[in-house]
Image (cartoon, rainbow over all chains, first blue to last red):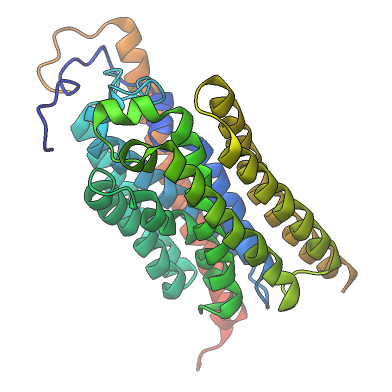
Length: 306
Length: 50
């Protein structure tokens, strides 16, 4: 740890099971499981239901483990930000050492389980996901560059590739496309959050884009990424990964995304700007969820009819 | 968890629940590996020279 840790020895009693579950960032985990599931269902071929379940569990645990390692490393700044101050380590429920061992054991365990029981392409990709999130994003980029979430976003984009690899044992253009959609979705998603949480990041010295380059530049970049994301979201329909429903959904949702990003771009700073940014942040979550849900629905429907 | 002053009853209860959770997780892993082995071997269990 780089800074003097105060959170370490103020433990208030024994940690509960729930405290350890909270270390795994359950809400992030649920999105990871969902996108991984979409990767598995859209992949050609089949996987025994038990092995499919094991793959999903391993991916979920691996994601949770990287969350715990992130909280271990970032405990000093988490303690000073409103959004994260209630996490188990800043609250003094879990010590740094406990979080570190928890994260390491689950990381190694999830990768080995996925590798041994399903296949090693998926296992290696899961290891890469965890390593990317912990070493590249958390340790290296987060506190150094405003490009932190652009590059670090790759970690969040890997899960559908892991799911796809669990079924096919390989990487292909379709799974890379799913990766790219999440990859280009991450910057506008996080920057819209950072726009109205800017003060927090500034105080703890995390160089988020609004802190370093200002709100105007952030809004410009949000719009730029939205303009890249919207057409990219339609591509699955063009290469046969998505069907007609997906085509319509991706066009409509993409247009709404760009529209909202444009609203953010035009908004003034202050209350009004915060409100529009929050709206985009919420919509961006719905956007990704709906795109993947439609893809999932189409593939499930096709399989049921076959 | 070293040099903890005194464990309250609540502390003991949480520690116990944690131990149970770990035990369940390990048992779950055993079942998982057993079942996965059966699935992966499938009919090949019988496929050997006599």
